[in-house]
Image 1 (cartoon, one colour):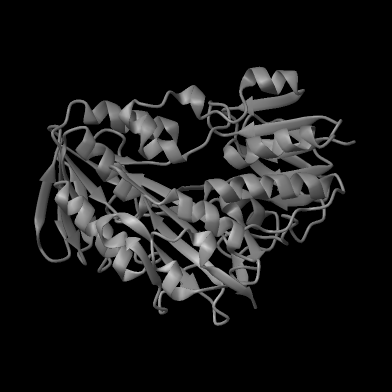
Image 2: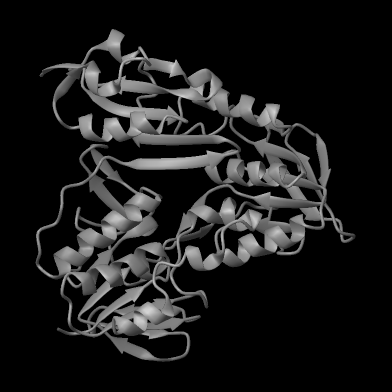
Length: 409
């Protein structure tokens, strides 16, 4: 088998290299990663790693020792600068030219930047890499206050970690509610109440227009409302800018991500794309989407590896996501309908219960669980079975969710 080259040293790239070997790939595999670190998972960056509770080696997907055992070449601290599709080669910043028979793009994304809010790595930080998290943790150790820009998952997790570390925290979110693109208002309100009770000063519906270091160990921010804020440090967590530049320059089809089929194939049969950079059709969503999650990185790596080796590709799984903030574990399974009225199970408003969404045929299609892992576990078994849910029984927390199924559709 000719060489397989993987561009991207994150979770998806590392998982793809391992999956290829696990499923019988015998040819050379080279993984090129921009960071000097081996491929690692990112969810703990804003939680365990930031708090110093999770050592980095527990995040590593593909260690250098395992790579050597599996005959996988790691070229770390190296950037690919160009793809030549006609010659089937990639060029690195060191001037090396690597041939490939199959190319996997797992380039992910970079922390989104906003005009006037540029991180400086001294008092103002982004959080996308392990180095970012370590820099924030070191700065937090000599700070008393933190300004977080962004009320999405990453910003909320950073805020929770900072409060657990004893810092005063102000969080600014331009939208009218937290995680407004992915959560229904009732869950946004639960998160707002949680952070407010924990002492976070929430500023919703107000966007920062300027952010700067004072030069004397602090930051100042001016908001659209005219309010002026000051803190010892700031973290800008306003999303991800997808790294599809290489693909676009090579003439691959892109649209805020690299367009692929369900197995990760691009419009070039020799090139696949996986992870955060891939915009892939999903049957649950009914459209193509980029799904930035731990689950999707692993599933897409597995699908691409199987397709490359001409093995059957497993069917798509229901999207799943989680976030840990303080003592709250929030899990989302499926795609909640923002306009539909969910079934309330238990007491989700107090952080212990679930919200269940049914499709027009009364079948379970999505769940948001707050400290209710058993509901998520059972929902995984029920979604896609065609079984109909009994609403009154599903709303009764004393009734196991499996016993709320009463007939097949």
